[in-house]
Length: 436
Ligand code: FCB
Image (cartoon, rainbow, N blue to C red; front, side):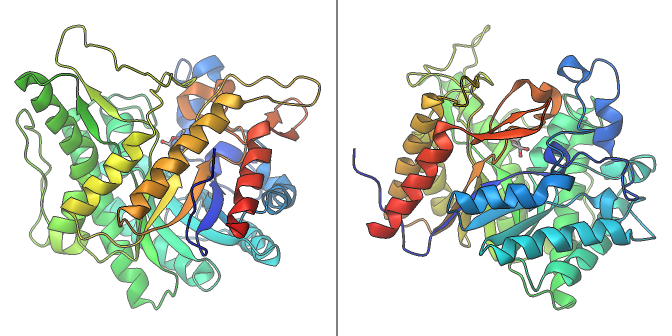
């Protein structure tokens, strides 16, 4: 099989997030976040797993950066723990926390790796949750202060700053299904939270620009095309509704200054005058996270997705064509800025045997998605880079340490890192690009 060819300056990278890898939750003045509270609440996560230690990246970051360099990758996307930098989410800053991200960024730059920072990957300072969290409009203002401080501090050294990672997850999983922190089950609250997240994004972009932050600014959204299980009107209407709730709910306010309508969508947030003007700040880039498509079957029980290329250890259908469908559809519907694929990857039931992890399904997943991505670029979508999720096996939220997404296997008892076959494959794939 020949490799798809990507543009010469395409950025190849890997992604992680703070709570999933750092550990050191009570060290050097870090304040607790809602994920500390949630993961320590009995019954919320598989095996009661918490991020207390995770990959111990807070102490091992230099070794982890060396791994990225060893793979020949040019980009690293990480997130900043707000409560490590500002323990209460407002007021005093924690010099030791800020210094950690200085060291991380400088170590990346010394290794020739371009840092892409995300300000919020779900770990709200618990002190702000105690005042209502994202349901409280004031949290958007607290976030704006945090964004400006981090932007001023790192904006001359990082190549991108994203405000939020996957606001759908914070809103829906955090406040509607309750699967994620803070664990609320209130559909009306969830749409209000989504609105405040979008508002905080727009306010933060505006304030960072006013403060002269140099780095390109954007947001990271999780997105999927929706396929109707059949041609029947009920399935098609469901597909339209799911796409509206998952994708358009975030894209429309940012690009079109409105919330989408679709049959069956009844809950809308309280909106103040000018909110859409605040939200719809121009983006320097859009981060797209893609894992699988939405399969819409109105039957009871629903028709299962065909999954002709299998499912991952999360139970998610492997559907690389969905990435092409999604990107081409977005380009048709919105005036897009440059795009980065900020996450794509799979959980696999990996086993370390004699120092090797033979994760052929992950290699097939990556190859399939990179082929689909190259077709999207050929179709005119301006994609600048790809970050595999994830560098390391890590704390997969409510699934705990059960699900392994890494290119690098982590033995949690010893913190030993071992490159999987997919890591070798990715390194070789990226090296071959230079010769194409
Ligand atoms: C995404 C998250 C990331 C990780 C992957 C598997 O939704 O952004 O933290 O959990 O899924």
